[in-house]
Image 1 (cartoon, rainbow, N blue to C red):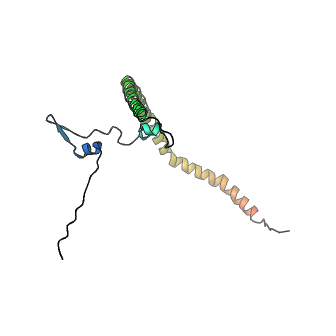
Image 2 (cartoon, helix red, strand yellow):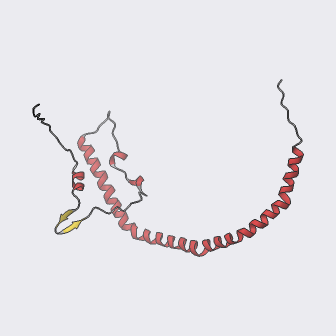
Length: 161
C-alpha cells in the first residue's frame, strides 16, 4: 500500500456583508465598535421589513433594461430611507409625547380606578355566590326537578312507513 495523494480545490464564497459580520468587533481609531443595537428585539414591526423585490418584481418573461432596474432600485431605497428619516425627525418627538401621555393616563386609570374596583368586586363575590346559590336552590332547582319528573313519563316511539 502506498501513499495516495489527492488534490482538491476548495473555495469559500461569502458575501461582503457576511464577511464583515464575521470579523466583529472591528477596531477603528482606538475605539471598539459593537454590533448595531436591535431596536425591534420582539419583532413587533416584522411586516415593515419590506425590500424592493417585495414591492416591485418582474417575472421571467418580462424584464426591463438592467440599468433601469438598478436605477429604480436605488431610487426606491433612497426615497424610502430619506422620507422615513424626514418623517421620523418631524414626528418622533411629538408622537412620543402624545403616546407617553396616553399610556400615563391608561396606567393611572388602571392602577387607581380599575384594579381597586375589581378587587372590591372580587371581595364581594363569595357572599354574592352564597346568595345566588340559595336563590337557585329555592326557585330554579325545584322547577327543573318537577319538569324532569313530568317529562320522564313521556315515551317516544319511532315507526317507519
